[in-house]
Image 1 (cartoon, helix red, strand yellow):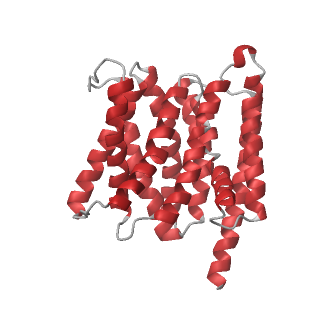
Image 2 (tube, rainbow, N blue to C red):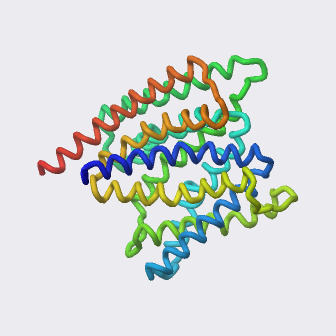
Length: 301
């Protein structure tokens, strides 16, 4: 029975991550301006982290190095990908948004190759190529439509995997010494909330959040609570099972995101999208096989 706990955690993590894209889309469709949704989510996430840090007594000092780290991770982990999701959501199905976000492993491989920060195996290089093919299978049909269809918004959505692909490379190389996961989570979320203030003042639309029990408010609440649980489950899996099993979360989140979009928004996808899903799954399989080989090699050493 105990052996099933990591599998249940993995399934929950993938389901939550896939759901979050639908929640952001739902909040925007309910009428709230994109920047207001982003600001509300960041404030709530920061508040939850503050409570957790106080309860766990994990206070820490801010240094110049830590401020730079938090600022960059806030931009890559929150501001750019969430903004891209919110602005593209009205024009791109939630399932396709998740598909685009699942390209992040390909961008991680490309970043590692460009920076030469890690050795990229042939399997990972092939996975990167397949990921690129999957993206083109979605983008090219839109480029042929009159007025280019949703192409501009799909290109905007590519910022999501780009940021999610670059961020872990940077975090791995620049993790602040002496800080744990909870402290880094607070620093990143708080930095994003602070950076959001001038953006909201300059570019935000007039209007206030009602904070009632409407669809938008519930969607934001689900997104925030789900995000906190998702991060906890991710690090739980890494700590308990290592870095191999957690890679399979990309499979679950991909199909979960498509499923949530079909359930909540009654989305239906073209054949090209389903073919792209199959190609992306093949890419993720190669990444998981490569991760397993690396894990076995390290164990043997």
